[in-house]
Length: 264
Image (cartoon, rainbow, N blue to C red; front, side):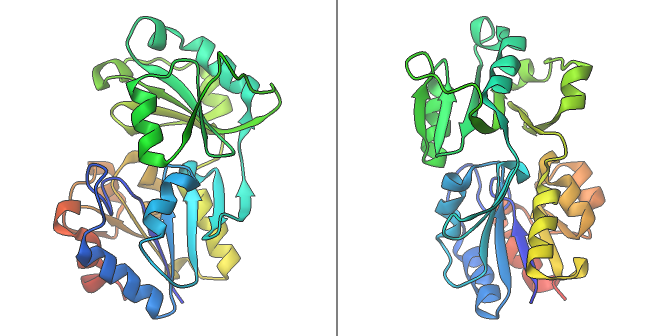
């Protein structure tokens, strides 16, 4: 058995669209042969399920929230690494100007399919629609301070997001990653997609050389580097340089191309 791990945006879908028929057929063929697949994404389980449900068979997994969770096809949690709502409030307070003056927003993924925000707006509306989440207005429905969140999202226009300054304390405490020019995401220190993939590999009893990872952005970099990494044709340069194979663009069904010409 092999494990095939797929990022979502920019890898199996373009701009929030659907998986191409070619990619869907090629991935399903691996499942039919007895291999395992994982959707490995910054999205929570609820957002990944839209894509996981395109396939049928056993050995379907979700590495969600950039590695903060590992769940099976039914949502059973095998691993969780979040932090407290209190810490989300601290992060928000440090970067409050993003919301109050710069037109962005700050929100968190809750543990029950909730998007937690003090400022429901177009950013949170789009996020909730993409990931099938329920928007919770924290002004009306605050969470207990010791409740848990999966990650915090700081979102703003790209030219603003790139100017955000993070303190050394934040860098020491959290894994902060740019998953898109508009987004900066706070996970627990040590949380990464590669960590989630490694936990799944060990759970399945596979060797590292039996794992193939596909991605395009900075949050895919380590999992591309650590395994048989496939960078999409539209991937950032760092992913291409770290990969074992550069495939076609996501709009050219690059996943199916790699499964045909790269997988041993």
